[in-house]
Image (tube, rainbow, N blue to C red; front, side):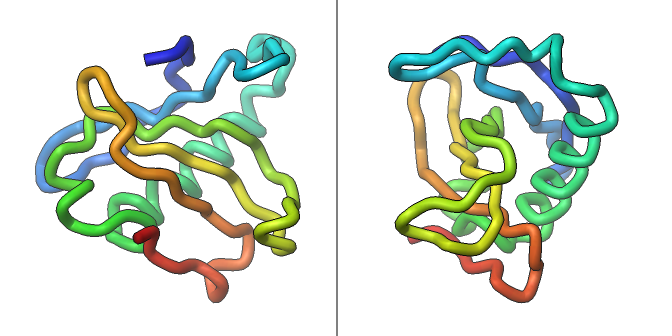
Length: 112
């Protein structure tokens, strides 16, 4: 797994699953300590709630997930014009799936 810092946790099927924030990616380094704690907490709460309630990933992914990593904080993209978080579901060593958590819950869909 690439580097990430824990910002929270959620419970999935009785298991605690860490919510993390990526510390970097291709061509960038995120200074996670510069992000206000309240912003990280809001992100963790929203992402954790949606994931735990089965609104982001299919059950096959939820059965295996050990970490939900936020790759991008709230943003818009060419593929999704709604404001959303980009998230990844990870097991012990590999990415299982990608997903989006839109700010507007009515726009939430489950990743394929």
